[in-house]
Length: 142
Image (tube, rainbow, N blue to C red; front, side, top):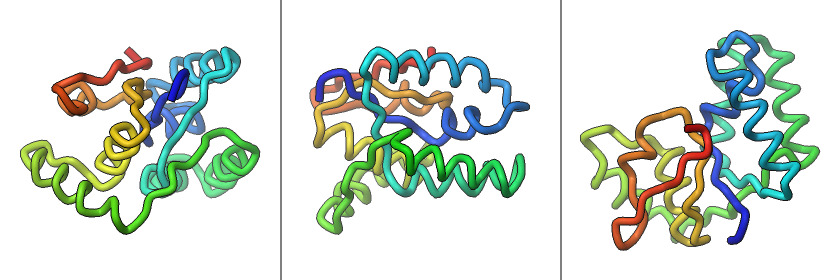
């Protein structure tokens, strides 16, 4: 998908946690990308992870603000299906030394199926994960 990037939980958390070290950077990078007609896509596991940590780190109201932002089109969702679970399991086994969590595995599956090589992430893991033919992600947070 042209001009589409997957977005991990980290930048989403930083966007709604003003005390987060990456808050300003995430806000600037994500807003600029969207203004340039970039599409942000994520998965429900990444959103669940972000929502949980926003509520835990910041406040219940910040979690509601996050969910409202999503409902207004802040990010698009990849439609994960049961058939995708076999690939999620393969990826989590392949990267068990990290270990790869469910959210990251679903984001890599999304990237593989949608032919996306751009990611917004603050984790080093996306510099290790690779796409078919050993192609690496281009992290737009770096």
